[in-house]
Image (cartoon, rainbow, N blue to C red):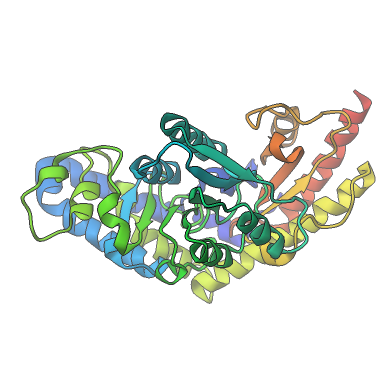
Length: 405
């Protein structure tokens, strides 16, 4: 099945139709080559590298990332993944019994688990707002979230782009509305960097965490945690290390604690500038063109899926407006023969069938909170419309097989 001409920049298996960039990302070969060079530099003299070379290299990567996401470099910490960022903020909160932590029923399972953990320990309560899916307008999400605020709401954990449903929530309006009600927001932007244009300082959120290894396409294990200037002193890393009592006066405590968590592989962070440049150079128009390309492609793929699902008794109406879609799109699947499981960790046999019989890698999700069995497609430069057409054919075959079984 023909891939995009841009596929030459990745090392993905040409025998597999890879429509799941959203889960773990995929790095261009030139970025992986840069990582290998960083690894060689480390191993030539690890002591010299970690003692003398790492800090300025990390600073450069952080400054490039800060420019890319519209943030003060001093507000950014480089971390391994967005789940760690969420946990870092939640564990830094001074919660009391009776406090409420606000989220939605679209929240990523791992982060919801982190909310439940800190709430239980403090005697606090997690309030999950029902955001509809299908959804007709972004205002429906904003209104539902703001209506749930009480005088006990301590913090809101809100997705920028939801994992199960691929919705771009109106995060600026949500953050502004919450601040007007005296509530700060931790934005779970796991899919944010590279997916949408970010201006974190202007957004005004207290905290924002996002992966670089998804849509920014760095090697696995690179992410950011943004902490607004007035809150930096209150946020501590999950690992307390040498920075906690460092005598250095040339860097903030926030910098000293987050920049050296102990020995780890820093190469995913150091490749952030390479990834920014590599993706921008692939297509005329740079990053804005990347985003337009992927947005248009995923919408075209969604239309193919919806037209095919109509044959199986599903509505052809799009479950969300195009303005709420970036590079991810979720389509509800029939539940007559495979009902929604009781956990969002439930494995759907359709996923394995699409991979084993058709060599298509695409997630099939169960989300009990939304009573949703769904297929989620991603669009990255290496994908083509022909690949979504192949998925539509395979989906047609497998749903017919389900009906016969």
